Image (cartoon, rainbow, N blue to C red; front, side, top):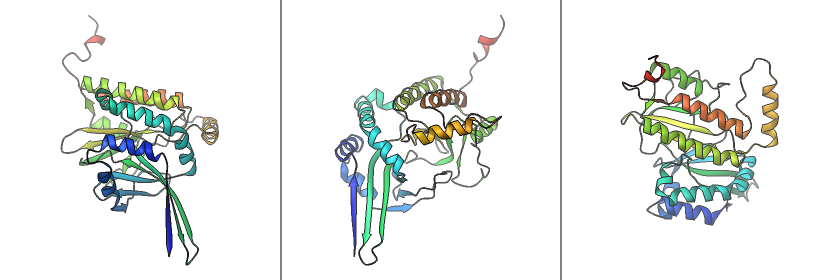
Length: 280
């Protein structure tokens, strides 16, 4: 005989958030969660467990205890920010945060063996749901250890240095209006995260082979700049002749992130491109 207990964090707030997102209500969310499979998220270094729902709508990610504690502190601000963006149709278009839809602690005890199991998990929307993605990049704006050597493997998540190499041969262009909206969105979202001492987030970017569109969203935005991260920054910064460490203070991280995204995504050239720099 085994007993499973489930602790739900911010149950009322998450239920209100899901009600705003899903036309089919709570039943639509529950139906998706009923059928899941273990998912090998290639490119992650955390070693944490991932699952994906059979219909591809949601991803379940194992959380560390530090992440749970960070979300408990960060949660009220997160709900306020997301609720405001969803309530305003214009603002909704300009929010790039991948939406977290539930955080839980699962406990299982087998009374025959006395074995106990406990795991913290979050449920997040799958940004690529409904898309046929051929290339996936996890972009932080850092050039330190941000290269995946096995680029040809199917499903591999590539990093910043891979993106820059790819862009040399297949430049990624966006329209001027799209670039403006993108940077305004990232500016606002990253400011919200920096104001709450959040860092080490990424811009997940996928290329849809059918529509030739970019699908993007900010992920991994739970961890705050705690003492262990500060220690990691000091240690990596002390290495001679090294690039800037991936982990820096939230404000420095935000500045580097925005500058990199501005470089990564170029505006489609037109007949006026370059004239401003020409001598007349």
